[in-house]
Image (tube, rainbow, N blue to C red):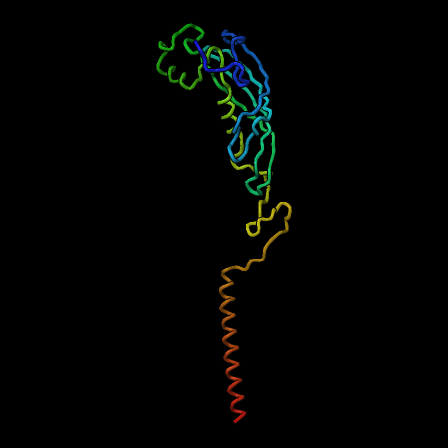
Length: 213
């Protein structure tokens, strides 16, 4: 049976050496280059081509091969509060079952399995000629492990809403802003003062006219 998987792809793994005896186990380590868009696009992720260290444990079970692993990589992004670049190390854990395509280890055909078992099999990814592609599982695990709102530090003060200055570098920064509720009263008071001045000026002018007469 032909397969669409390419064994030269660093994220394609071959299980033939593991065998199909239940309980057999194999540990693998591999460093690969991060594929394109490896993370949350436009927010945070591993740069394309950056090294990603993968540790895998392959375990043969009745239904197929249970793969458990951890991926370690550097991720880059931008703080959502202060907009400064950030960098951190990420560990993403994952587990996936890759099923034998035609029959389980006891030679039982899938067509003969109960309906409930058939539904469970739909959640498993079939092996292709004994191989599996880890990229979809790895990509999902990394995305789930990444913060949706990354910050450079938990107490990041962000940017000033008035002028945009970084408040982490200027902790005492502030603007004197009058309360808008008082601003209206201050405007009214100013109008009254101006009116009083006009009245006083008019009164003084009347006195001067009388004196002249």
